[in-house]
Amino acid sequence: MKRIVIFASGSGTNAENLIKFFQNSNKASVVQVLTNNPHAKVLDRCKLLKVSALSFNKIALTETNDVLNILKASKPDLIVLAGFLWKFPETILNAFPNKVINVHPALLPKYGGKGMYGMHIHEAIVANKETETGITIHYVNEHYDEGAIIFQAKCDVSSSDTAEDVAAKIHELEMAHFPKVVEELLK
Figure 1 (cartoon, helix red, strand yellow):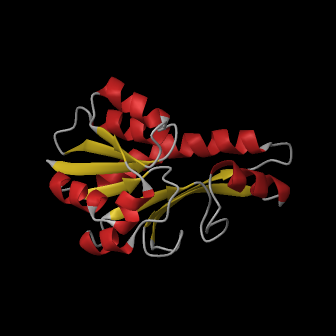
Figure 2 (tube, rainbow, N blue to C red):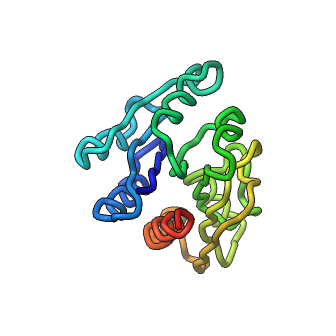
């Protein structure tokens, strides 16, 4: 049975989707969710879904080996960043080479980098009058949003779309594709 650990910072809809997708799987399961936000809604979702969840601070992630040791104990086959907003430390990337992936709510390399997340991206897409956007699932490296691309899915952006409309379209793409791509990577 393959083991998945998820990192999230916010509401946790992608985490919940992944947990539910693998709940009845005989191939993989989400064994733990880690968050940098002690007030994140993802913690409530995990409680309801009976999945172990822990919050940690910046020191535990970047200045000590606390989070690294939690991961080593969890023995993940894949670490999935699902709305995790902090830069991922090289110590963990080195300990789990090619086992850390992220979902980004835009078609990289466009709209990537520090500060480009969530509504910031969708507002920029509308402001720049883009005609399409989408999601990118990619490996995580030491730079924001620069790891090798695994998968992209696109959607149209109409001239009347608001940032909220774009966010809804992106959410649909994430819900449809993210679990399947994770499952494929674990084969």
